[in-house]
Image (cartoon, rainbow, N blue to C red; front, side):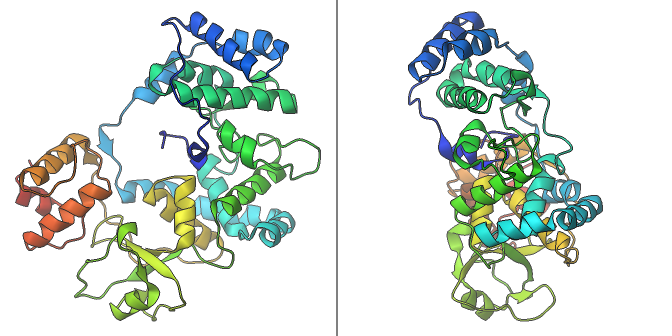
Length: 395
């Protein structure tokens, strides 16, 4: 997913299948964009007076190309997002909006605490919705060859939204990549899922709390939200746990997890309805462990990051009266991407194929690392511990 675009609106790629043919200078590219807009039925006024006046924003390209030198650890990510302030504010806003939230729960099946958690993580409950001019950002990205087709599609949808709802270009602000409003919808998600929640005839995700929360509930329902099911839960593992089944690829029935000795975080047996779950160790075997249910996967479609899913789920639990994690995430330094690339190269050298080293510890890298750890007599949790780096000869 595109960095800093929290919604899984990337599921809705507008699909210009080939990159837009454009000249190297921005004005010439805009002319090509205007031709595309005309072919998609946008009005002459929009083409001339809105699209014709978009500006190139160099900062957008800088942010798009910027690759962080380090990968954030779970502790650093989680501690900045699940805070006492967010829990308190989420509870206050839940109470303040209870009538609407209960209506949304009845209609869409999404409990109030989850909508509060998404809202809190996306824009700090609407206090920061981004300041970049969306049309300028999208036009700038549409005129960059790397993902011209995708961003051209998003730009066209944004222009159609402007026409449909008579938004002023100046009020259409958001993230550098074009995510908008309280819930940070990309234009494609806005088009597909936005709902007029307050009945004024306009789905306004910037200025209407009711529209934004209703749209988030609709989006989650459409992504497959399971009514009356949790997102997941923190669990405890037995001392002799083998770590054989980790991640989505090794999802197991709850009865299997119970047989393996997995317990609730309060030490009680996990319930075993006819459901499956995957086990996640975001900080390795020394940190908290989580079982993720179907709604874990739904949240993952909103933002494809296990850290994000766990933060949303746990924040929702806390807003709903739950307690802090039983096992606090251990303090860990952020991982250097260069060091992870070395680890990946060493794994490949030793016959544990993890693909081309890219410095990103994805599912293939974790699987290969687990195999190596098992062969080296280490705890096979797929986490790049210092012991694993040392055993591989990574400095």
